[in-house]
Image (cartoon, rainbow, N blue to C red):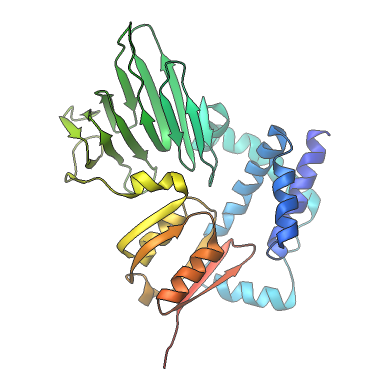
Length: 319
């Protein structure tokens, strides 16, 4: 099958997903289509980036959605969608960090996780939306984390004893024989967060050159110039591999932001619910289960539109 045919099929799936939520049978068919080949997966990654434009809905976007469901559907033609997807391939690749999805040694798309075993036996676990490069020389082992989150179980070398480093835009991290988690999200905070599960990690900030050592059971966030307060290891460092988020008196708005790392979506959250404290274990890959868990425990009502691309959450009035 030619690449053009695959792009046309991706376009058909976009139109179908925007029209309504996929049925169980359609979802199975859709997953089978994506898994046919790497070309199919790449085509859909471009399509997903196109769908992410829903993040920029206006504030009254939910009203538009409701009206459209009653009167008319999005009238995108297959040819237009194909053109958009095709153009995204070059635009995204060279004008944003999205290029790392194709150019890095290892990467994951939004919602994807991956296990990697390196040549020296070091084990990596990549979380959603992550990209990194590997540079092994006779003198040292270096991972360059462009963005995302990784958990590293460093291998002990018997003969060469090369030091093991992880680099982000903020800092230079040296593993001291350890298991640790590194998160570097290119958001408003622009910071790296290090969680150490075993042994210790030495941190050197890129700009100020300040240094410290983070030990097992500790977590530390920092930018290029200074360290934040040292805290206890976040339990989510241990459970994200199970596609779960653990919340302990977490503001609902923050929980939804964390869920948003795993799925493209626009969230219209009632202002009075933003600070609502929630606790429990919540799935990152199943919005139906998330909706059930929240509605059973808290006075709110969630609506899902456009194939789960849009969430509308309102306070539920109880007598």
